[in-house]
Amino acid sequence: MDIEWLKSSFSTDTDNCVELARVEASLLLRESDAPDTQLDSRAPQLSSLLRFLKAADDDICQLRI
Image 1 (spheres, rainbow, N blue to C red):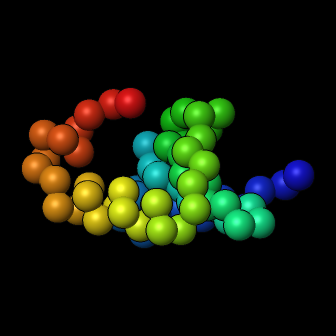
Image 2 (cartoon, helix red, strand yellow; image 1 turned 90 degrees about the vertical axis):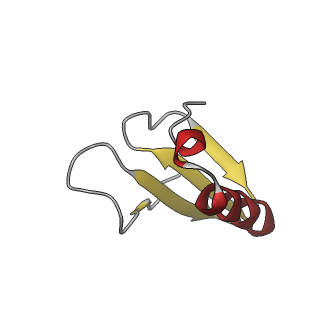
Image 3 (cartoon, helix red, strand yellow; image 1 turned 30 degrees about the horizontal axis):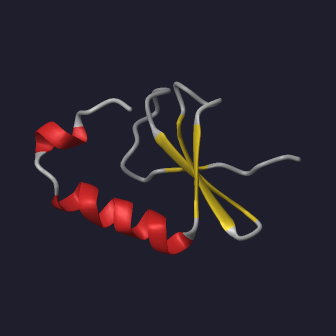
C-alpha cells in the first residue's frame, strides 16, 4: 500500500522533519530520519499528544523515544 506522507509546515528542507499520513481510520506519525518507526494513532489520541507537546517545556520536547 502506498502511503502519502505530509511534511510538517514547521519542517525545513532537510531530512529532519515530522510527517503525518492518514490510512483508513488511523493517523500515522513519523520522523523522516527514521521512516520505519511510525506511531499509529486515532485522531483524539494524536490530538491529545500534540496538545501535550505544545504545552510542554522545551526540555520535554527534546526527548527521543
